[in-house]
Length: 355
Length: 257
Image 1 (tube, rainbow over the protein chains, first blue to last red):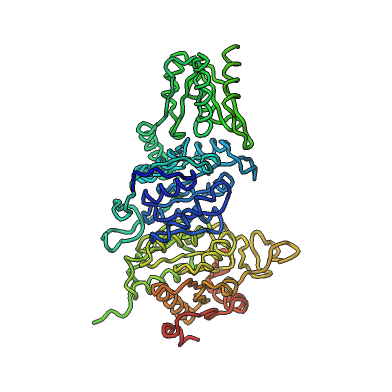
Image 2 (image 1 turned 90 degrees about the vertical axis):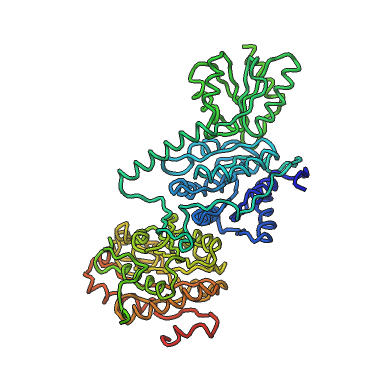
């Protein structure tokens, strides 16, 4: 039954949500901590007549996504941080060719091979394009197994709507933990609208040839294409910015955190409120587009902010850009696979408020 | 009266950007002729590589997809799997170095697209650097004293067909050349055999085509066809290197063996 609540790992919920979103092509490569997702797709795509391939590398997997996306198919790959670095070439090409695709990063700690424990150290890479050239991808940051499923499912529709790849940025904790999840209704891939720009089916569509490419050697033309793409990004920014606020209105200090660190921050908020300390939480759900305007409005109302991250301080730069010197912005982070505790965050809040 | 000869419909009647004496134009033409003969113009997709033949999408009159350098076998894998009834041609020059992993694994998986591997023993578009297929002793801008396999760390020229022949997924691997009309005719038959095998879904097919690059070989087009004959063909033997297609289906190529 569609309304059943299932107990699933985050990685598995992402896989099932992708299948229900009409993903017909998945290309993966083993890397911890996202392996359950690849295994889930291996077990469940082929029986449905869909394509699963374990590629020879992350590079190959993203280029398979490029090929499938070029035919108009809903396509996905997943990996974890070092593997996502390898995919950046392909992501740049997807963006240059305006191809929709979904890329899941169940992030781990870095740099280099780093470790396999959860991290938010890929924020810069995720929100600033990540590869070469001028571009952005939409970045969605789930905080739970339920939201992993919901955002992955929606990622396909957003990617098709805007013709921009969507990155789902989870982390090893969200990928590995089990929670109850209510899954979205399955979409029949055959019912999805045809994409007029895609390669293939030329005969039945009776059209001139389509060329899917990111190349243009004429500077005037390439500049015009890039300007048009950035104009399109402005539309996305207007329509898509998404965030969650908890008890921000009366807060003396607002924690800004996404994903796992937002869950920790929520616990710290509850503990603080129990002690009578007015703490709020601002949780960006879209990391690109980042909700600059809302944070700016809160800064103008005299709020102060504490960015909490599992990194050495990356999203905090966006908080500073948003508040633009109008409010104090502090940072608390753990990295290397360490997850901050509620007690640590609460202690930092108390330290800041006592200053 | 029946038209016996004309410009193939699958190739646009426009002048190419390729240099005088370049092999790409002839290879494009014979591919287009086979596609016309098979009646598959509007069911064909070409993946054009990075290199001179990145221009292929300007000339072939059907759909195209342009992937990253060397990644065309990965993209072609997905395209063919999404559209199994289409003719998918992976046109590659960038196969034996940056695309090595992609071509070996696509071949090993028995992916059912056809690769046309253009071997001109040089990097053309970037201006004459050493290629994996540059002959020992051959000049290149990055092999200024000639290719020296071991001491200068340049390695030996790679025979792609022979390398791929060990893989279970490969069904048809042939090597032709476009340096004279007889070789062009044979190469066209190899391409036809490969494309027909693709449409029957037999497995991985690849035709390597030895081609002239007079500009970067620094010789005239007339000298280039002779250089290919005297230097490339002795090292890269022509013919069907591997043919494990279903026996009844190989008549087209049989006469050439």
